[in-house]
Length: 287
Image 1: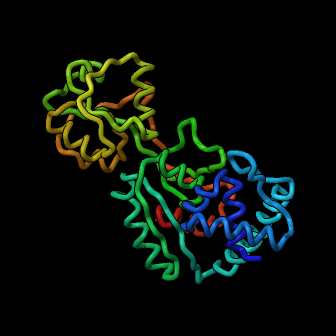
Image 2: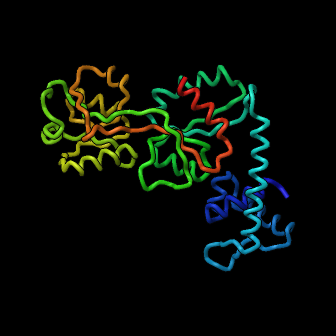
Image 3: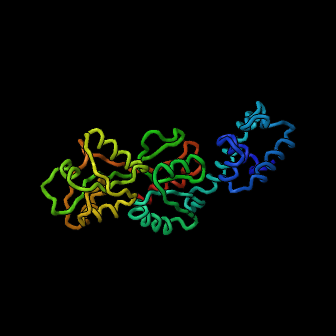
């Protein structure tokens, strides 16, 4: 009985289909089927009821999944114990939103490379909601995202890292106008509504009954800020204080009553076996 086969069984149980398990485990569908067939032959039971349109666990299958989760957790804990200490080693699959990739993460990765030579981190970019789904599905071990906005997978846990504040940015020639006046008179450069920060902006616009004339929608804070400063419209974006200070001359007004805050967090699955690695990443980001 192999650990790979047990992991295949648990993945199918969590995600509902053989095809989804094959995607998540980077296996062919035939390999997934072979893993389950081998387990059934070794255990002399039927693990899935295949008479239905969507496969379902049998009673024996439910018991096997529970025991498999225990076995896999024990194995992962052993790997974690062997990897702990000064010679920290292992691989962390990390996701990150664009602003973190552009600002804080590179310095943290340099710090990690200098202090933990045997720790390897692979990085994928994306928007918060997408990264959350990938952490839930097991494609990523952790992700640096905006604090989750409902609805989001309840199996995820998050740890606060830092905060950004929301600002309305416009050309310096528009100084003296309120946020409502800017939005009423200028094209709106929207932060992508699919992003959790974009949802926060949309909710506040509705709460204040502010009407906008949408000009474009982007998921890049830097691009939106640059366009707004050059007079193409007004952008509402979350920005760190140091980034705000580096802007060229601009009209910058707090957005929200009270001013909205975006919390950036480290997102992990509640059953993650890589917390000792993500804890070191958090230390690097703080350092």
